[in-house]
Image (cartoon, rainbow, N blue to C red; front, side, top):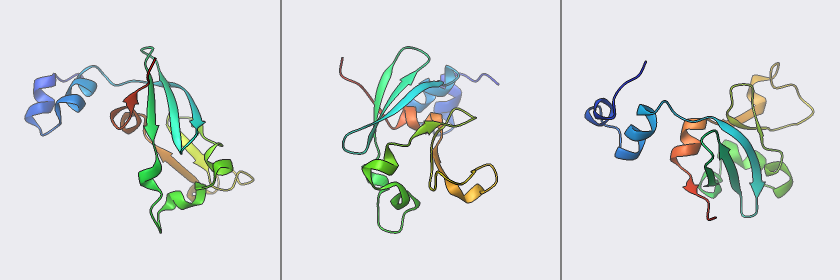
Length: 117
């Protein structure tokens, strides 16, 4: 369903989110871990963006399970095109549903910043 930017603005979306969703969103084509718990994201429109994940590592957060450089570096794109980590890489997350942590592609785009070129 295509909606206009004005529709999204009238329904409480921020101007950035309204522009993003009015264009149909983006697809992540590649993801890699970078120093300082950041992700480098490449999108289908040629943009490269940086997502700082440090705010997610609060005590008691599910993200504590990947709060080592080794675990964080196991990031991948899941079958739906979202950024994901398997908490225990020896378990099949399609069987053990509680073994995966993920970010949807839309939040990755909206919460990231353009990479310096």
